[in-house]
Length: 584
Image (cartoon, rainbow, N blue to C red; front, side, top):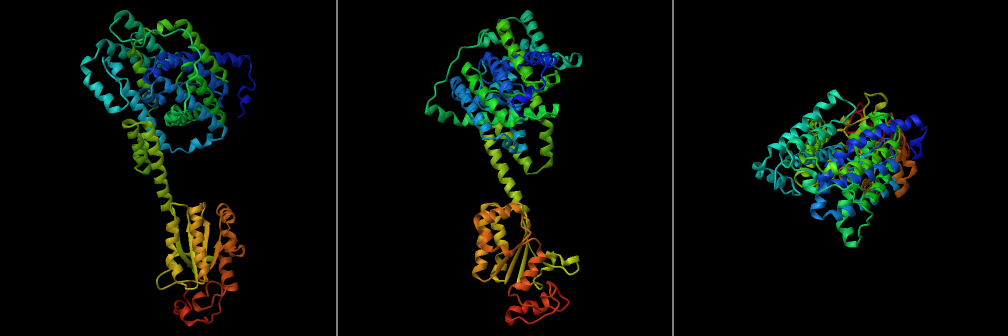
C-alpha cells in the first residue's frame, strides 16, 4: 500500500469519524502515556510528549491506515534499564539512534524479515515483560514508602518484601477503587474507557478524603508543565554511540516487532493491508524527532490501535487528531494531572500487563512439550531474571540451533534398488540387504535439505559405498528442496572422489534451486549435463546402455532380460550369486 493510498476517497463524513475516534483514543492515551513513562523511570510528562509527537508522526509517515503510536508497555523494562545504567540523556540518544536504525531497516526493505522471528521467542519475552510490569506496580498499589527501584527482578521483589510493613491502607483503598471501576465500567458504558473513569473517580475520592495521605504525581515528580519542551539536539560522540549501540538496536528491533504486529492486527480487523517497510520508516522518523523534545521511544500500540478501529477511524487522520487532543489537554489541564495518585495508575498498568501476557498462547506452547516449549520457557525466564537483550539473543540462538537439529534429523539418505513387485519396478530401501545388493550401480535416495547442519551426515552415509568403488553412483535428489554452500562442498568432495576412482556420478530429479547452486559453483559442469536426468528410470537405462556396466543375472531387472558374464569374474560375485528370479 502506497503512502497516499491511505487517504484515498477521503471526505467530510470520514473526517468526522476520524475526529471522534481520535478524541476517544487521545483521552485513553493520556493516563497510559504517563503510566508508561513513570514505569520506565522518567517523569510522567515525557510520556505525554511522546504521545503527542510520536503519535502524530507515526500516523503521518507510517505504512498503516489505522496505526496509533506512542509509549508502550513492551518498552518499559529496556527503557528502565537504560535510565538506571546510563541516565535520561543517554536514553534520548539511544532512542534517536534507534530511529535511524528503523529508517534504515525500512529503506533496505527489511520489514518482512521481522516475521521470521520465532513465535515462542516473541511470546516468551512478551510474557516476561508483562510479569515485570505487573510486579513493578505492587509498590504503588500498596503505597509502600522508601522503596528503591533496581534493574533486576529479584532485587525489586526483595525491596517490596522488606518494605511491606509500610503499606498504606489509603493507597490500597484508592487502588482497589480504581481497579473495580476499570473492570465494571465496560459492562455498563462501552464508549468511555474504563481506565479513564477509574483514574478520574479514584483520584477525586483520594483528593477529597485522603489528601496528603496518598503519593501523587505532583508529590513524587513535581508539577507537570502545560507546554511542550524546547528543541534540544543530543550531544553525539563516538564514545556515546558505541556505548549505546546495543540498547539502540534492542529498541529498534522491539519497536519494529511491536509496530508490525500492531499493523497486522489492524489488517485483520479491517481487511486492509499495511506497508511494512513504510511503517518502519514512519516509526524511525517518529523516534528520531521525539527525543529532540524530551520524549521516550515509541512504537505501535496494539490496544490503542484496536480502539481506534472500533471507534470508527477511517484514515491516519484519527492518529493525528489523537495527538492534537493530548496536546490540548496538556495545555489546559496539566495542573490537575499533578493530583493523580500513583495508586490510581497502578491498576491500569497491571491490567495492561495482564492483557499483554499472552497467557493462553503461553500455556498452549508449553503444553505441546516440544523444543519450542524450551525456547519459550528460557526466553521468558531470561527476560524476567536477567534482561530483555540477553533473553532475545539467547532465545533466537537457541531457536536456530534447535531448528538446525530438527532439519538434521529430517534428512534421509537411503540406499535403494528396483522392486520387481511394484509397478514400473520403483526403487525401495527394503530391497537392499547384506546378501542382496549390486556391486556395479549404487542408487541413493536423498530426502531433505542439504545444508551445513547435516552435510556431514550425507557424506558419511555414502562413505561405505564409495569404498567399494561401484561403477555408477546414482543420486536421486528430487526431494532435496535446498542446498547451501556447505552441502555443495560435501557433494563436490563425493563427486571428485568418484571421478578419481573411475565411478560415474548420475543425478536424477534435482529441483531448480539446488540445480542453480551447482551451476553457479561449476559442479554441474563437472558432473556433466548429460549425467542429469528427470527420472530415475532414465538414469538407470543410461547407465546400462551407455556406460561400461556389465550385464549379469542380478542386473536383469534394471532393464535387460538377457544376461552375460562380466569381464572381471571377481567383480561380479555379488551379482552372479543371485538366481534368475532375484532382482537387485
